Image 1: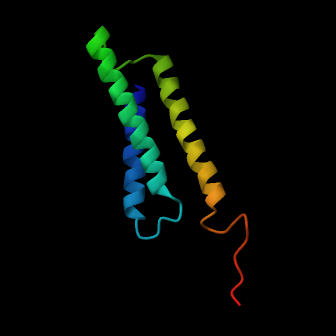
Image 2: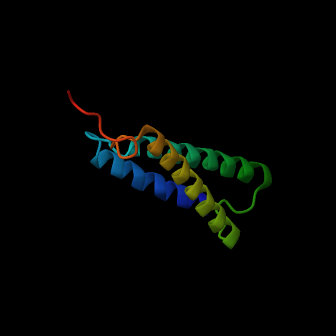
Length: 99
């Protein structure tokens, strides 16, 4: 289930980035890259686990849902920290005066 959650979030973030591509003020490109990287990593993990151990490809347990949400929260936290550091809207560090 965590693969589904991450893939869904990556798809939504890509759509947001694509709709705001000209002025990517909120750095959706970075969020999209984080989520697609995590999705590909989880996909490889699922494929390798399925090929070596067999069993279910998608886990439909409460633990898998919680893990997917924790991974999504971690990705959003990293994105927000980078967004705060870069401060593209000049909210934290103030606007530069033009002289």
